[in-house]
Amino acid sequence: MTIETNAPFLENELMDVARLFPDDSAAIVHAFSYGQGEYENTFSLDGKTQKFRDTMPTLNELEQKRYAKRFSKLALYKILKARHGTAMPWGALTGIRPTKLAYTERAAGRDWKALFAAMDVSAENIRLTEDILRAQEGIYERRDGNCDLFVSVPFCPSKCVYCSFITADIRYTRKYLDEYMEKLCYELQSCASLTGNLRSVYVGGGTPLVLEPPHLKMLLDAVAPLRKNGCEYTVEAGRPDVFTDEKLSLLKEYGVTRICVNPQSLSDATLERIGRKHTAKDVYRAYEMAKKYGFDINMDLIAGLTGESYEEFETSLREAIALDPDNITVHTLCLKAGAKLKEEHARLDGETVGRMVDVSRTLLRAAGYEPYYMYRQKYQAGNRENTGWTKPGKACVYNVDIMEEIADNLAVGANAVSKKVHTGENRIERYGSPKDFPTYFAKIEEVVAKKNKLFSE
Image (cartoon, rainbow, N blue to C red; front, side, top):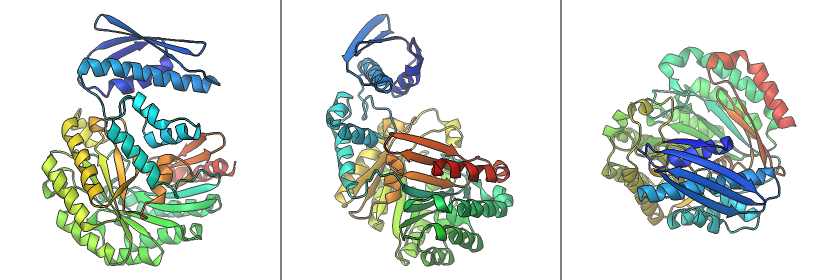
């Protein structure tokens, strides 16, 4: 699909809507005009011209652009919905954080449910959003000075076919490991005064437990001075083939409260197809090892993995629920540039993935889990979402803060993106560290200086 518009600032927004409807080669011409609080969108398609007028008084240019985007997307969505005879589960909403939009509407004294309904969001997804807002009560806090610490460990035992991160097989990156740990620990030490009111620590990757005990201890020693208040402490342990009692014991010794065991699937055939070097049996073994240490445990599953059937996904989900972890996150596979899978498949089967997501909601609710965070990405199959489910009282603070963007995020390491949240101005400043190891090493002083500047101001 191609779109020609006289309003360049709307082009990306319109293309986001167009991508919701696959296999459409239509050529669309769009004209936009605005005056005296009235927005006019005219679309020409298939020899027909349709005009939409909406009225909304605005206080400033920023609000004007926000409503221009909203009304233009909704107008195109209505046209394409009628053309294809298909409604999307999130309607004309294309942003990655629906709950953030709901919070914004509520803070302005408006009915967010009415907006979602107007944007053709399904009743089930309105309910999902409402449940998440409820589950975040007591955790959600917009206050200057709140901060979360993210530590990047971009090493993995192998590269999964769906992965678009900079992480690589440690067999090929081990030569960088010693220097990376040295620079990472230096950065942690240099940024220790920037954490403010620290709400959580999250060590992610990659697969952090791919580190051998000496390097793991080095990392935990470097984090310890920053975490003086005993806040939530998560390590994305990741794949079961890197679990050992020695490593888990170290995590416990240093006060880690939560770990992630991320099988993505409990089908051996699927695990082999996606490039994993372990079996479902290894997942069960790692899970039981972790439970001995009393950690809260998160587990991840992905709907839409290569060649996986609906029945295989449902079996994985039921088996994950039977393990009784504190959190289960169900991701919808997203095809991104940089992933091997992106090169092999242009688009995923949205109908099957939709059934997978639907059954996950049914089974997780029935098992006593509640949704507590959610986000969406471009190119997700079936226009679905990623949702974190938790047992009551076991929500992960880091996940809430990072998804809702309500606290500073001090992110250290290669490819780590730090965020400074200016609550009163409703504004976020970002700084991304170099992605590749040699550049990160060479620019470590610059990285430290820029983060100190970002957070000090």
